[in-house]
Amino acid sequence: MYKTKTGEEIFIIDGHVHLWDASPENIKNIHGKQFIDCFFGYHTALSPPEQLWSAEKFAKYGVEQMEKDLFIDGPDDMAIMNPTYLKDFYKNGFNTIEQNAVLKKRNPDRIILNGAFDPRDGEGGIEALHAQSELYNIKGVKLYTAEWKGNSRGYKLSDPEAYKYFEVCEKLGIKNVHVHKGPTIIPLDRDAFDVADIDHCATDFPNLNFIVEHCGLPRLDDFCWIAVQESNVFGGLAVVLPFIHSRPGYFAKVMSELLFWLGEDKILFGSDYGIWTPRWLVEKFMAFELPDELVKETGKQLTLDIKKKILGGNAARIYGVDIEAQKAKLRRPEMAMA
Amino acid sequence: MTLTSQARTEEVRAALGRVTDPELDESVVELNFITGICVTGADVAVTFRLPTYWCAANFSYLMASDMRDAVAALPWVEKVSVILDDHMFVDAINDGVAGQKDFADAFPAEAGMDLPSIRLNFGLKSFERRQEALLRHMLAEGHEPDIILQLTTDGLTRLNLNEEGQKLRARYLERRLLAGNPPAAFVGRDGKEIVPETLTAYLRNVRRVGLNAEFNGALCRGLLAARYGEAPAALPAEPELIDFLRMAPAPAHRM
Image 1 (cartoon, rainbow over the protein chains, first blue to last red):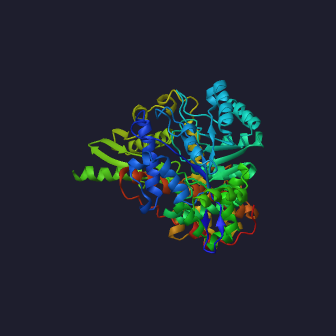
Image 2 (image 1 turned 60 degrees about the vertical axis):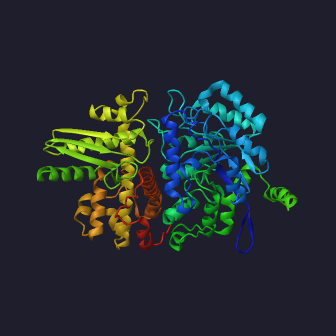
Image 3 (image 1 turned 120 degrees about the horizontal axis):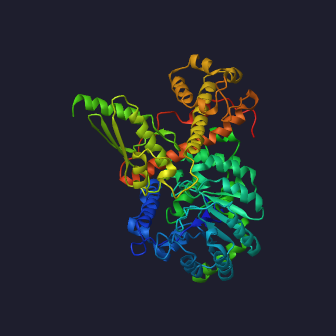
């Protein structure tokens, strides 16, 4: 919970967090090493100096550290856990639903556990998706279109194989599809982080929500254009938000564009923990104001109400979370402890 | 180092300075990608690096082959080698570029690659970004929209602009032909004319392209610096669009 100076409580749903294991024991090959090094580069490049971790801590921080950073020291009330398997790089996977389920078990009311699928897994993958739904009652999935699999270097959401999975999602009530469309890593000729495929599946599956993580950052221009035409396309602020510290001027411009093209109801906060911790991000975001010049130019403001939507209201809506009921639920154990 | 080889090194650096990262539309020299230029007589060896191990192979390949061609175009150069270091595809890229192979030959497993169309797509983004900067500059300097949009390319070339404007114009004209060759100086990426009534909406549209490149440029500088433990390279001298926006006339129409 974040409390404003006037005492108003703001319910925070962190839309994008990870619990990964990139310890030396789990790294399979040079790619696994370079992958975590690249994440660490993001952490180093965009964090305030006092928030920097050591490379060792960054590689594997563990469940308790995560609970502390999110829910005790941090302002998160709930967090959406998105798995990233990367089994070609890491022996037990980088960040699997099984790993995440440990955190869910310890914090059942705070964690929204998402699953994952890969359309290249065929029928077996469809069965696995059913199993995830049964076991964890998932309401969302995270897709990583650039993930390597054998000789394949990625897939598109508009591939017919992907459509079979979306049909299953609709049937099982898995409404939220988080798609990693982020900084250009690993795409080869297919340019697997291109955002055009979102356009097709968002039109063809109007009952699903497509949350484009990192707002397709290297293709922000293409993304805005697609999102404005599709009412079920959302933008996740992970990676975009940390610019609030290092380049607040750029951040203001990007935020204005997102407010202008996507609108205030379709932007979701995400810390991308453990790359960044939510506390400083939320504090800076709450204190942030768009420059007058930009407000005049776009006609879009970033008011307290809009911040509340971005920090939790929008995610609550698409995940069916009743914020007031949830607040009451979360208050109970704290009172018991007191 | 003899004076000649020093002078030649500078010539090579200047040639490389005109090679851009297609996604960022900035010089590979300014981005701090070049790690070494070695001139031995008429032989030139260039080494370079990128912000991450994962930087897209197609963009990396484009840059490496553009570097090779830019250096080879110097009249005294007989042999060029361009070597990328610390990247997941060092061998395929270095061998491919040395052997003058097409990208598809260097990466046979990745069928369907079309490097020219990627080059054109990002060339057009660069066209839009440079055009927007020039248009906003001219509007801020008091040029009337309908007069600007009636200019031919020749007319634009002859127009009296201040130093800043001349720089922006030169950068824009480098990309102008990518959008076809109608006489008008300012056209959309499809070669169609821009009319004064929709200019504001048009500028708002293309603004995302520049913003995107600026954002990526800042990210790539940060990642490169973090990877190699250095201070990030300075941002380009070109003024930020925000500076123009403050001066631009208030939009009459919004999409």
